[in-house]
Image (tube, rainbow, N blue to C red; front, side, top):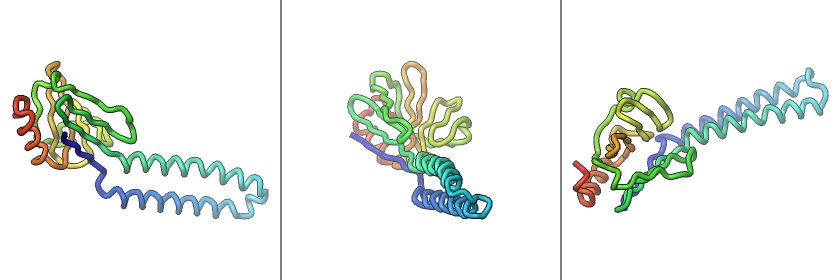
Length: 169
């Protein structure tokens, strides 16, 4: 079985930056609510509680964007992949539905102009990739095409050639 997990590059730095923005924004907002224009302590608490919601939502948004992963698993029965934390359900493509599967180089924005965050669509079908320029191109017998990005193209090509030489080219 072949397994690969793609992660957003530099995600630790991006998450640290997001936390700093939320903390600085929260500090600035809470320091404003300490001014004399908010004399009533109950009103001040109410304003702070209201401000906490958007700050936490922003942090959750950054978490979903920055800590996104694409997990790919290939075995004798199928090719499976999922994008988490957005999806808990695996997308499964059985080998009997695959006409051809091979590793190829692609241009993300040039070939797949619509979409963002690892899931894009274009005239060549769908692509699921977070980083890199290589992917597993799957051409279905029904005519659909899916490209799943890989950070280890040589390893994936060797695995396909060794185990699935009838569909890889």
